Structures are given as structure tokens and as C-alpha cells.
Amino acid sequence: MSAPVKLLLVVAAALVDSDGRVLMAQRPEGKALAGLWEFPGGKVEPGERPEETLIRELAEELGITVKEPCLAPLTFASHAYPDFHLLMPLYICRRWEGIPQSREAQALRWVRPGALRDLPMPPADLPLIPFLIDLLGP
Ligand code: 9L3
Ligand code: MG
Image (cartoon, rainbow, N blue to C red; front, side, top):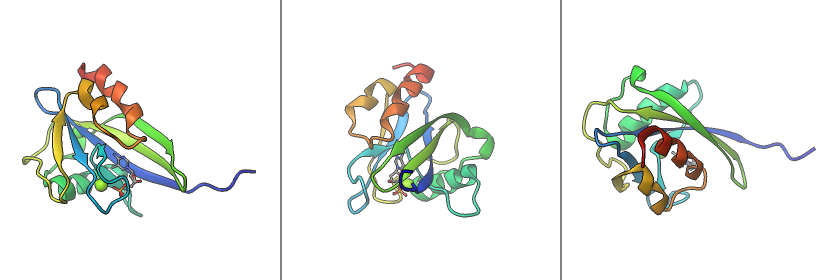
């Protein structure tokens, strides 16, 4: 038998603007994977439903209000890190209240799906790019 693995559930969002661009956030200094560009989101805390987590994280990180019906599941990432296995549902969101702003010192960028490959991203996020290109075009 192989060693037991710790499963980590993280939820992430592709916020899509009216031009079909996706909001990417750069992980700040001091965090794991600092400097890499990711889909915003975070860990599901005990007792939370994933959609609640995502709504909370988007409020904390970006200062926007998202209603649950505006979150549509798109795909998920399943990625082995050395010390845990990450399972990360990705939701599409096209509607929110407020203007996304950096609330946690992270840089933000709106990026065309076809240009996502040019950003250094966490390895878990990379396989999500083709799904966004399929949905939104390059
Ligand atoms: N992670 C990867 N891609 C993402 C997100 C939101 C998170 N789009 C990974 C990085 C960390 C773990 O999930 O290893 C937990 O994220 P955080 O709580 O450190 O932001
Ligand atoms: Mg986060």
C-alpha cells in the first residue's frame, strides 16, 4: 500500500468580464507559490459548502459580492503536490457586484484565455486553461 495522502479541497473561480477576459491574481510574497498567477479562490473550511467558500474568498480577496446562482461549475483540477493532493473545482462567474480590487496585496490582471499560457501559473491551474479556451475562445 502507498502512504496515505492528505486531500485538500480548494475552490477557484474564473471571473469573466464582458470582453471574455478572465481575472487572474498573483500569489503574494510570503505565500507558497509566490509570484505565480492563479484563479482566485481558497481552501474549503470545515462546515462550509464549496460555493459558500468561494463567495467568502471572492469577498475577502477582491471585495466583490457574488450570488450563488451566478457560480456555474466548469471543470476541476486534480494535482499531486509533494505533501498533499489538491482537488480544485473551477467555477465560471460572469456576474458580480462591485469592482474586483486587490484586498490582499495581490496583483490582478484581466487576461484573454489564449494568453493564459504566457503567465507563470501553479501547476494545478495549467490544465484548466483549455477548458476556458473551449468556452470563451482564445
Ligand atoms: N492553489 C492553486 N491554485 C489556485 C488556488 C486558489 C490555490 N487557483 C493551491 C495553492 C496552495 C493551496 O491551493 O497550495 C491552498 O491555497 P491558499 O490557501 O494558499 O491560497
Ligand atoms: Mg486564496
